Image (cartoon, rainbow, N blue to C red; front, side):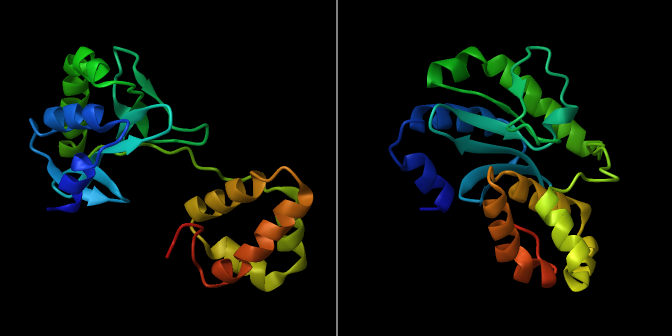
Length: 192
């Protein structure tokens, strides 16, 4: 049994909704893969949709959802810092059936976006507002500053968001210090 088949066979809160979503996705010329521990659907090697389960809902997430037209107004950003992906919040298999026509339109449009080679235009963060503790570390440690500035803008942004997520200054400093070795190696927060 493949990892994807095992995922769908596993009993769970969203099993029926996932199976209904899978049935719809399999109507399209997409390759079903297993990435990040989840079923992912790709068109010619480009990720189009991934199925995700959460405590209160499950969702098909469109990697380039920001480019979808969304006439049914069912797409939402997965988080306040999301710039490209959009998801549909699903709470039952019945809801999948109710939204089936919209989901099919969105999937077809997402494939057309890939066929056209469209890219999400990300607003460049020319000057990230670094948290105070990170700014202090950058100013006091030249080797750290050079390594941090050598990271890609996305990696710098991810680190800054991680550091800023701590409410207390001591926690922010601790997070920065724990990440110093990874930054000096040129690794992003989620790189392995």
